[in-house]
Length: 189
Image 1 (cartoon, rainbow, N blue to C red):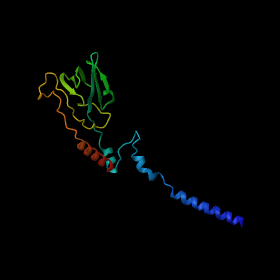
Image 2: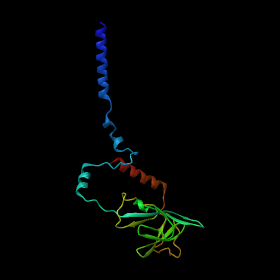
Image 3: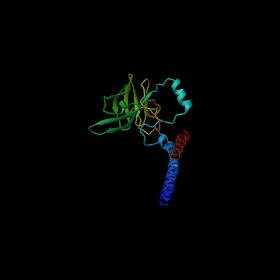
Image 4: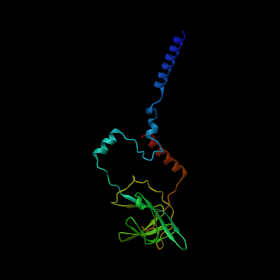
């Protein structure tokens, strides 16, 4: 009798274990976590069959690189300009006379930098981007940076093309609306 009860109990446990194994979640259950893991440094946008087929037929496009002035530091003893861009070699901190991309820095002011590019002088304001044509980009095209209020260049008239663009209002509701639209696009991919 003990043998029969032991065999029955073993069969019951084996059957329950088989049921538990069948109901255990597999990797397909966590597909969303694997494809949209925000902590994965190598993540890419989700591909569709039509997009991957078109990608194999079309040749990769060459995009223009951008250089942006992220800030300046002007003190009695030192003036520096901080640059960043779509290429890693555009991330530099330079003094007057330094060069980044095809631009040479001629003067540094608190809110802008005067540069010489291709023999022409121009002004680059803090937060403004400069398109470098013909240079390949290491990154996808950047989103436009919001314009910031900047002082006009010394001696520049308000309508002068060298003067920085006027400031754009950054209303909180507008920013929130754009963030919600971006989130909606990401969720619909």
